[in-house]
Image 1 (tube, rainbow, N blue to C red):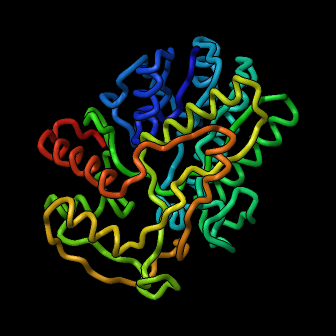
Image 2: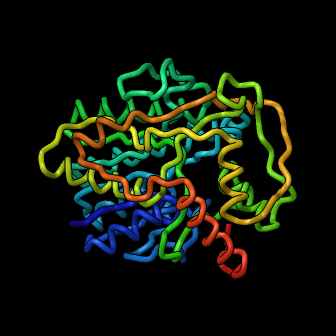
Length: 331
C-alpha cells in the first residue's frame, strides 16, 4: 500500500515513516524542512515541498498516487501561536485545504489527520471524551479545530474517509535510538527537562504553580511517540476494513503534574538540576487527560510503552546521542 506522509521529516512524522517502512508499506515523505531533518527519513523518498505551494503538492500526489495520506505537517508550538496567530492559521488551515484539494485530484480515498487535545481548551471533565465540548484557548488549538471541520465538510461532499486523532502530550523517542526529537528551543516539558539534565539549558522553568491541581502545577497525559504511530496505523487499518470516519483521543488516561515529570527526569538521568518557578504561560490549560476507551475499543489500539520512566529514558538516550553528534542538527 502506498502512503504519503506530510511532515515526515519531523519528530512524529519520522517515527511514522520508520514504522510504515518496517511494516512493508511504500512510503513517500513530503516536508518543507522548516523543522524536519532529511536524515530522519529512514524509508522511502523525501520530496521537499511546502503545503502552501499547491501546484508542487498536486504534482507530487499525481505522480506518487498514494492510497492514503497521513497528515502531520503543521506548526505546533502553543506560545508561538499566541504571538503569531496568522502564521498558524495560514500554515495549519490553508495547508490542509491545499492537501485536500490535491487529494481530490489524485483520488486518494483515506486521510489520517494529526489533531490535538488543544481543541478541548479547558475541559469540563477529566478525563476528556471525544464528544466533550471543543473550545480552544489558543490559536494553535483553533487552527486544528478549524482544520478538523474542513476535513469533515470535505468528507461529506466527496466521500473521503478520515480519522481525526487528537493527541495528548507526545514524548519519547525510537527505542532503537535511530531517530528522535530535534529542537533547539523546545517548548515541551520533558525535552526541556532533559536538555537541562544534559547541561544544554541552565535550568527548567515551571509555568504556573497555582492551578487547581494536586500540587498547583499543570497536569498532562504523556504518550510515547511509537504508541502514537501505532494508533495511526490502527486508524488506517480501520478505514481500509470499512470503518466509518471518526475522531479518537490518543493518550494513556493517566495524568502527571509538571513537578512529577521533573522528578522523574531527575531520577532517570541521575542529575539534580535547577528548577525555577514562574507565572502561568498564556494558552495553557490547568489539566488535560485523555479518555482512551473509544480508541481501544473501536481501533483495538493497545499501547506498549505506557510508562513515564520509559518515555523519559528513550528521550534521554536520544538526546545524549544527538548532543554527542551535533553535526546531525540542521534545525
